[in-house]
Image (cartoon, rainbow, N blue to C red; front, top):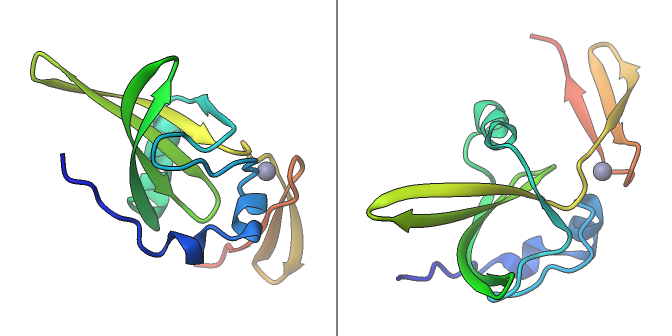
Length: 132
Ligand SMILES: [Zn+2]
């Protein structure tokens, strides 16, 4: 299998990036970032609906439960998904994981149609413009 090299990861994976995503360890090519937990595929597809297929992706072969898994990290500004793809008798399937914090936002109005969303768990914030 070809390996896509994520050349710019040193520029993306900064201490602020790790803090914003609630990540304790970024891991490496053979270990997943921590923490991660299984999530419903619809959580990923909601991000695709809103933002497309992520700002960055990274391929890894990680060991989970003593088995090798081929995963793609799909990195959005606020959420990282780890998608475990596997084939069985030529049928491709996938399991979805969310890496880091499952943000739970409270909203502050900071101007006409501008809202700051702040995660109550980790403090990550983003500004949303709700005008048309
Ligand atoms: Zn959070």
